[in-house]
Image 1 (cartoon, rainbow, N blue to C red):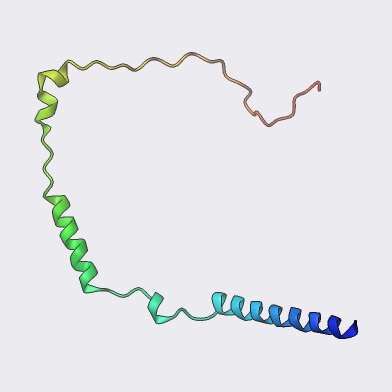
Image 2: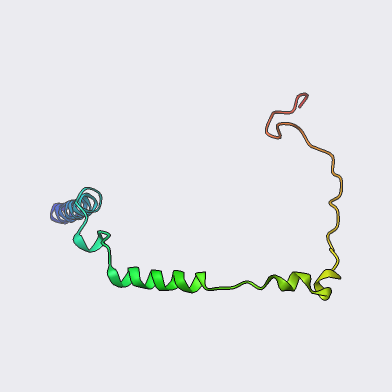
Amino acid sequence: MNNSNSKSITILLMILIAMGVVLYRSMFAPPSAEFLLTEDSATKTKIEVTLAKIDSINFDMAVFNDSKFQTLKSIESPLPSIPKGRANPFATVLGR
């Protein structure tokens, strides 16, 4: 029984040491080169092309002058008047 107890303690210590190493490396180790941000010319070119496409979009504002658009009516309805509650809803109620 003592032998199985010592094996359990040894395994537990090995797991704790492994977890400690993983935590140390993830929190305190310097970042590797693959995670550092670098200026990539291909990415920069893709961004510039996308921005050029966005800049070339032309919005036709003539739609707003169309007679069909002008005849549209608003369907909004006013909100009902509801009485205000307490100033502080989390305050304790006196008399309870």
